[in-house]
Length: 105
Image 1 (cartoon, helix red, strand yellow):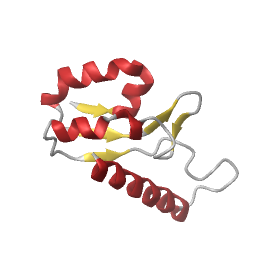
Image 2 (image 1 turned 30 degrees about the vertical axis):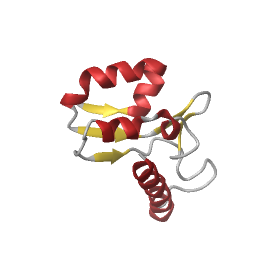
Image 3 (image 1 turned 180 degrees about the vertical axis):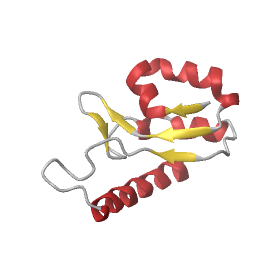
């Protein structure tokens, strides 16, 4: 199973924890994208994933499979062109936030 915490928060709200607990032994990859109510998917950090406790649950489940970053937000900005440089900037920023979340879990 690929567990997508951003999608779980979007679709299941607080019920995502029960789904996580029921399926965790079957996880083979964790997808990460940040979600913020009323704003959709956002850059890593201002959404609900950081404070959700998701990464602590992964740690407590001894999760050791891959974590896949998903960039499903307007990473270049609405008025900026989608360039390779802009994408790399967004990915590096998100990676830094992801590393912080993982280290604090």
